[in-house]
Length: 240
Image (tube, rainbow, N blue to C red; front, top):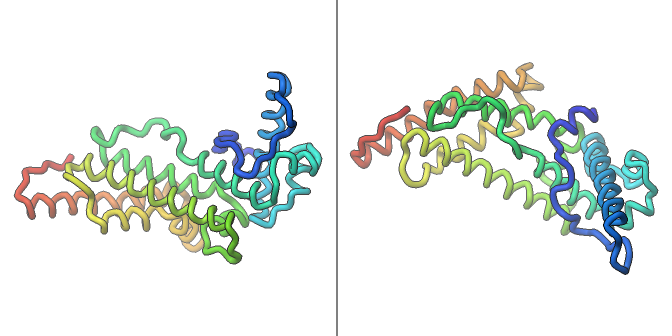
């Protein structure tokens, strides 16, 4: 489990929303370094435990996994839900921080870029295991201000990512202006985490096979949308 989690988790990306100062007076550089190392241990352990147990992960288990006391965890976080929020932010920060190696630029090879990107995304979806997947992506069972923040964070990150990828593909294929809304929705559907889970669970497909399948579905949709724009506006668009 730990190897799979640390594969994509890059470490603390943001300061915790629910943090408390460790001391009232200024700390020495050595003391600050120790504080940051402790914080990193807590947050790495939180990612592991939340991935395994979902949002029911306990502070006790996170403290045990990080090798610190429960009191130390609470010195950095006021509440259990505050720690959950910081943990989910770390999960989102770890996704796609580095472009997959070997994927060509979309302007040079649209098909290769789309296939490599789709494989990378579906592979990343499998790296959110256990109960955490459903707690993050399913409709929330219990509402609270912080859980609502988590839901909003997920929605904003997903829509921003989908719109960016669609726009890149659209312009690489020769489209002008904004991509059609139907193309955004096609990207959202084919690159969805639920698509990954359904094809793995019910149809015994690997992330690589799912990436190939979904990119093969998206490519003609992209080119068809560009052709439709050309026909509607009489523009001499040339598809790569």
